[in-house]
Length: 460
Image 1 (cartoon, rainbow, N blue to C red):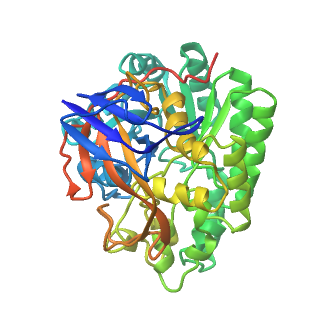
Image 2: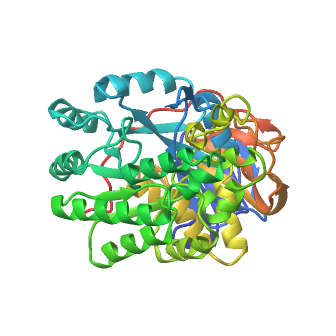
């Protein structure tokens, strides 16, 4: 089966050029000057459109247990929504429970995802119980294609690890080449602030943000960077939201340390004002770290331009407003933490291009090429080049759309971006050469495959 994508502008992390793309079965066979190829079994006209590598969302939580419930998207619904938004690879998190093993956890997540995904997928491993067995199992996880391990400085009693436990895991990562991912918030201090707020009768959703101040994200980020420096481990800060944390990352990178960070669209576009919406409406915007004051947004956009923020992921962890978010009515600490977003990442970052905050090349780099390199998938993913998987998006840069829960495909009853009017829209999506989204609708199924990943490709 040969597919020809003709007439478009091919985008990469290094620039843009007019080119035609020939796909044979699941791979890109050739990229050539317009008109070189005359025919194929299927021809897709990309005239006036961008042709870019499929997006890679390196931070999702499908079917994730949290606070007595589960995130609303299954692997089937979540990966279909990802495809609608131009994302052709997700990397989800397998969650080790306290007292559980990494390997049995990985098996459980394979049981959820295998045979159910519309696009390709990989796993990170959440390490919540550091012991000799866990440290040994980290090596086996690497053999099974899981090369990154997430730890938490937040959520005492659930995911929290002490500095000593983090140090032990980082030493193992340094020995094996694995990457430690860190949720960097000072959970011990936050829990005390939460208790004080509830004791004084402050129970509304905005208190979630007020009890998790930016300074405590900055402090934890600095501490994680120090532990990584002591151990020599590479460190990846997830969902960075605050200027204080970004400053710590930038300093470490300037000093040559292997420290990387991602941010998420919600921190670029939303703010604590959304958490403070009237009544219980702010519960829709409860996530951790919380939405910050708007003044942080300019710093985050600058961090994206300078590459101090290397990746844009979503931390997609949707909970329905009805019945799920409502678990925290009268007590903000019981609101499930998480927001939907996997479908809108590519579009929202394109608004940065429209506004002159990002170049086209940086858009592709932050959403596709860098996550592929960061998590051991390049050049199989993240680039339009001969031999790479034919994960391709045809994108109409001039189309207009309004984001809404009425039209999105995520299994959640609200949109965090309700009413956002944006420029640009995914037109066609290929996953390993198969059209899964087209102007006529969704034609994907459950053909996504597990991706066994190599080590981070930014390390020496």
